[in-house]
Length: 294
Ligand code: SF4
Image (tube, rainbow, N blue to C red; front, side):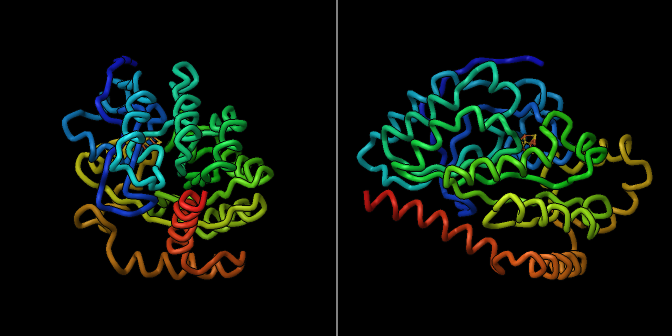
């Protein structure tokens, strides 16, 4: 792996899709979790696959740049999503330890935070997260797509086991930090079976997750070639079953309809809210309002 330390002028990045928030903070570029379906590659079109996973850029001054962004008069205190197109708790974070400085900056500026991650390394920073939750609010979204360890090891080779990620929700709940599950991306004919979906819902429920947002794999830009190259070598015979479902980047409507029907019945079984996305948005709005009341 090649590491490149860089500096950035600004830390916050605005985008139009209001999924978690309109603001992202990416402290790295590239990601060492090496998920075979990595959606984030579309945002790094100028890099080829091996570069995205192997050449990781570290924004060494990101906490200082963030502090400057938060200090601007125009900054309105919106919740910020860590990290939209990388993982802030990827393996390299053990060495670079950037996240504690980031959380401290959020605490100083009393700014709410949403963290999306596949890593239990987040628990290293539990004391800071507890503090931030008190002064502004934190929401953690744990990303999981397969509970079966054989599949998980092939699809997300450098991320911790899914069951440990879901267990982290229980730990965060003890401290009143609200958590949800991003059940994504579900891969057709690999992780879309009832057993896998049910097991994720069940484990999430047992650990106190507030929401589950499911999403089927999409393959924008070079993510498609990369994904099918991996599928060919890791799951012989699967490519010919998945490919017909994709005309472009997105799975076809018939598949999607059946998938969401399947999810709806499991959701009902475990009594999760019916509109996960709306519940999640409400949680983000709550963070925003909480800050304004302080
Ligand atoms: S954790 Fe996210 S950004 Fe990192 S490789 Fe996996 S999908 Fe890509």
